[in-house]
Length: 91
Image: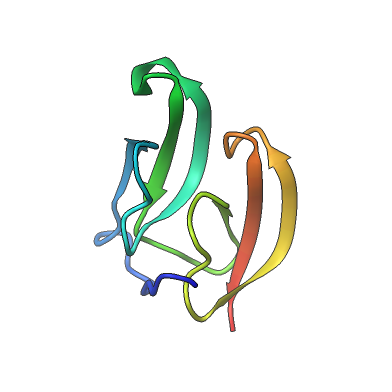
């Protein structure tokens, strides 16, 4: 099940980092991850954004947004805390 996101303008886009103590908030996707981050109590740290665009890379820590599909999978990507990295496009 995916989350629904709209394509936003850069002025509306936001990026932040969170520790993996719960799920990625609705409307956001993980774009980078660091495993065993000391500042997160050795949990994963995720960089997340609320902006998506065709051809973007996202980490498997978040669901593929509704209306988008995975065109490529990079397994065990170190830039996604060793989870899969997806390249996504809209249907």
